[in-house]
Image (cartoon, rainbow, N blue to C red; front, side):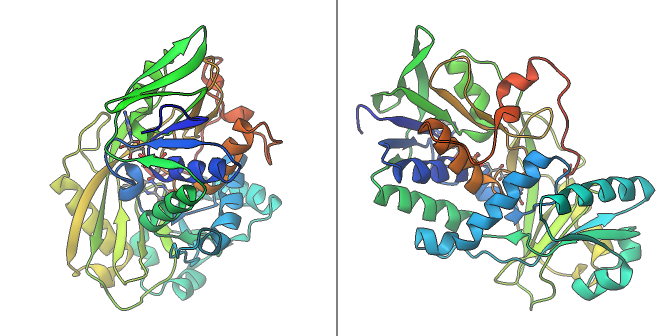
Length: 381
Ligand SMILES: Cc1cc2nc3c(=O)[nH]c(=O)nc-3n(C[C@H](O)[C@H](O)[C@H](O)COP(=O)(O)OP(=O)(O)OC[C@H]3O[C@@H](n4cnc5c(N)ncnc54)[C@H](O)[C@@H]3O)c2cc1C
């Protein structure tokens, strides 16, 4: 392992690997430290969805600009990331939902997203398996450029491209401590040695509060267990991701035909609880059958759990801290895969002293000091 680096990134998920790529292609000497394997955290357990329909402009812009990157990423990184843009169909259940949807759509269209409100006939046209009454929906919003990509392939593609630009990626290497001297980061202590560095990026997902604590910084993030499942493969039935903020359900059909989805379990908890629950399976199977009756009798192949790294406003924590050289890249709540490409680009610009393509000041950890944060409303669970 190298004994010094320009930047050390803690965490080999999508965000750590994407940032390693963006930094190393700018000429920085980068080391990524991952305590297990690449995509071991939330990245390898996620729903793979890429959605631009958010209530806050920060999330919507990060997602929109990430989609612009995703659209050329296979070519840029030299590996197919299995991007498919079948759209996101978000259920509207009542007048309150409709009011919020209209506000969201107005903002989303203002920033250039092709979002619209659709009604029963069009919902059925887009996804014929849906039962609008079973969904308890009066309408939906739809954005045709939303979609999904393979989180494993995307992470590996970023990692390989970073390595081609000279980055070193160390798996099975755990960060044990961060050394800080006179308010500045000086080194990272791992179970395999010490790396001196002026910049450490905390991209440790649900474990980011531990990494921050090593540098003497308190964080408001909480790990929340989330569950997901995948079914046997079926012939192609629909192309969009279906989602409801009220019921918390989301599901899509993957490239190879499986249905992948999740819903908050009645037993969902805060803290590091990894066990999958039977109550999730029952609840998901019941709701999936209500939303899409043809899926009632299909076989579930596998279920798993992962952590959301949840912030009080469901917006990520990005940028500088009171400790010079300690950079936050976490708090992605339930959407850190879809905004990773733009997040990585912005943090690389920040670290390299370039002009940022969009401001990220409102995503700085300092926003929690004064209270009064604006909460992202378009979240599941
Ligand atoms: C069930 C589920 C469904 C989801 N669905 C979606 C979705 O559809 N779309 C979407 O955009 N997002 C989704 N998410 C959220 C998304 O997965 C995360 O926001 C995103 O993957 C976070 O990536 P990351 O790289 O920041 O963190 P992670 O992928 O969690 O990576 C952090 C890494 O840090 C490592 N690490 C921790 N501590 C240390 C240490 N001390 N030393 C070294 N390494 C360490 C961990 O091992 C881990 O690999 C979902 C999440 C879950 C759980």
